[in-house]
Length: 337
Length: 120
Image 1 (cartoon, rainbow over the protein chains, first blue to last red):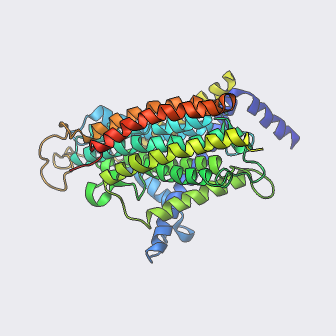
Image 2 (image 1 turned 60 degrees about the vertical axis):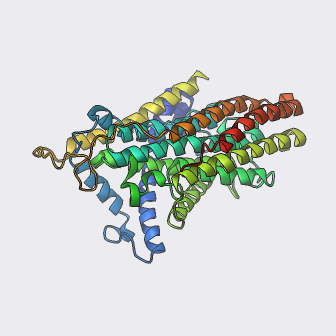
Image 3 (image 1 turned 120 degrees about the vertical axis):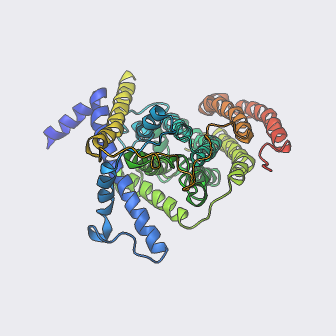
């Protein structure tokens, strides 16, 4: 047993080994979580609409996602002749690459992530905001009107909501005095979760962060870029087979990453009653993911211009006010002590 | 220090392996050898014949949004180091940032009054 621990410690101390091992473990688990999120979404939305959802394969239909995955693996490669073929085929894996990469700095255990960067929050948000590029490239290279409209809306929405997203993430950063995610969680020890302490700005910042990350992930009520009843499938209209699968997988991984960040920034990450650890972090992230799905099947969607106006006239000023409130608290209260 | 970034780079490589690995698996397993079919390879337009290209000049309203974004994005970049160094500078930093943002908010108000976000 101690030999295993020694081996683990050795792996942890060598950078590239840590990246490799933590990378493989984290990404495998997160892919599985994304797969089960898809299953959960189908099951839960079914229940909400008084129908059973998937039932046939495995208990409660949980094998259905794997059946779908292997079905996608066998689909033919369809590239419409009018597209910009090279860009069209190049873009899909980038979506998954980008969302998975942002996990490099997201810690799930107290020991920290693969790379406990001093600019963790910033790097995670920066990497996941790179999603704009593959989405835009997909929409433009498709040479399809639905895809063009969807991509235009997606880009406008993503860049707009990036501002309140970053600003609301700045609130815990100010309160903790650090961009390092492990330190931000450390500052929330002893039930000083930033969502509840200091009362007010933290909770409001969480609401803004949550709504903005819904918009970033193009989820209802902010899913106008792919509004299937009017835009077919938005930027991904022309995509089929695993090329579509990449966008689909990317969306669910993105939801989980955003939920993980919210749990770390506002709900104390792995802190909790009893022993700290992975279980609390996962529980919080999964509850937030489930709430995103519940919201999706509860609300209707906004119009594109309403969406942008909501962001620029309410979210951005509100986020700025919250940043100042947090700053004032930090200066007057001298930190959280 | 270097260790962290090496770990991050290796992590990115693993992420790339996952993304392109699935694509490779697909390339090996997918159905092949279908005949070319102009109707199936046409652009999707709800069953109609595609009417012209989608590579067109587009309405500039999204461009206006992008301009406002650039304004606030740069402002956010200024806020980041400010947030980290609040302890050292105290209330002075808060007041100074208030002034800076006040000027920016004038531009923001101007854009709103000009109807930058009002689509007709």
